[in-house]
Image (cartoon, rainbow, N blue to C red; front, side):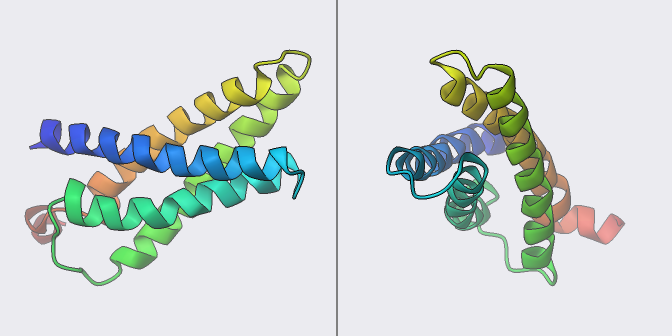
Length: 134
């Protein structure tokens, strides 16, 4: 079961990252906002897609459980902070290199994706059995 969820999560993640990166890079390209705000906006845009795709596709369309939306918001607030923090540190670290934006984005995304999968699996979209035990 976890293997199937992980594979679908990765597909949803790729789509989510595409939305995030398109938003982030567009905001930077058009100089609409600074890098940190652009990263946050991109992340939040992807988050909206990720919630519905993961709820209905990755984790089997489980019935809405009380507090799942609040747990999702809490998880994504935490991983947003981690994402922007890692991105910011790496942009500063590699600022002299042409690949800085891409490298920072990829590493920040990898960290937040790992945290998101674990958080959604065991905190947000817990299986009914794990809720009974808890």
